[in-house]
Length: 257
Figure (cartoon, helix red, strand yellow):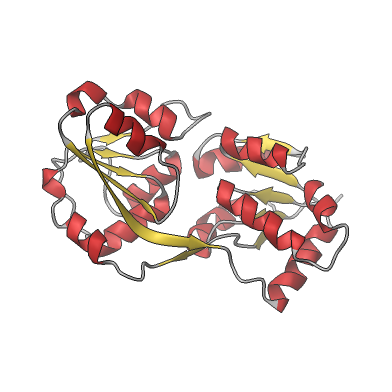
């Protein structure tokens, strides 16, 4: 019996390594990005913030995209300033740029079943940050929970955008590919709540009265409870929650028949 195709929906720049490792499991892979990551129209605020890194008591990255975008602007980071990330994917992104735990202090959630701003906050010594400056590097839009929680702890927070996200254009070729993928029963790796929303919007634009129903019958592999909750609200029933990071996603895929 042919095993389901694994559809990886990450932005292309982040999808290749996971695709290669998935193929090593003997699974066939399709890349179908549900997010485009774009540079900022005006990078001046990001450049200005990165020129003053040593004045911050903590540098927090909300995603691997934030890390890649910031390190492309400022490749040399002071070892003296602690870093904070919300998941294993971000730890791996830091490591790709040479920022590893043997040289840097890196805070991240210890609970791999749930990695997000809430669990990152549990690892931070908020009283020690009171009255100090923290820089949060993120996309143009996103959750405000981390910044708001730090401000409530009397931390001086600066938030700066490093990139922008948008839905990929539904070109005729992408429309045809999506219809083809929905025709079968596949395993979709979805690592972003926003990507899941964009997917629903794309399907609703198809000239297919059964498109949404076909989408709801696909099996999802997701690394976070928040994505699980949104998927349930969209009518999905076949949902596998993995641990954070590529290793967690691959373990979930390997466990499937």
